[in-house]
Length: 131
Image (cartoon, rainbow, N blue to C red; front, top):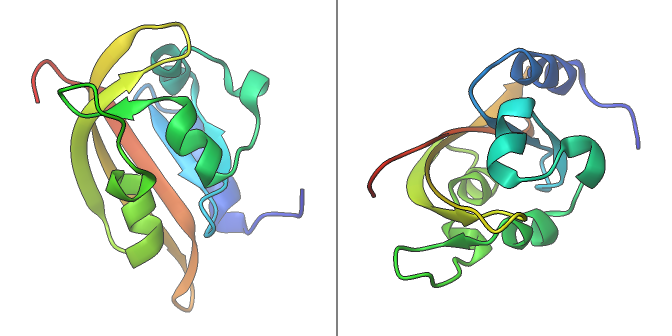
């Protein structure tokens, strides 16, 4: 894996120190990291998955709507942020790799380096009771 920009290294360190679940991707949407708090929702440690392309991570954790219909990647806030380089927000369900289902709310935002270099995006999310 090529060396990452300092901003992404710091974003990963920041995410690793949080108790709120977070997810970090590069400008192409490739998964760079998710923290321990996210591992409990996804049902798998980051060390077991490692990096994944957007086509993989956007489906492996089975994001669905309230009726159980799979969401297309373009409906996910983090994918929207990658596409638009703007913050995005949304709520949906995750069926994790252990078979557990969680409602989550996600806020994603671009990581912009100087001068206006799009370096990737980070999503923070939490379990919610109702959508």
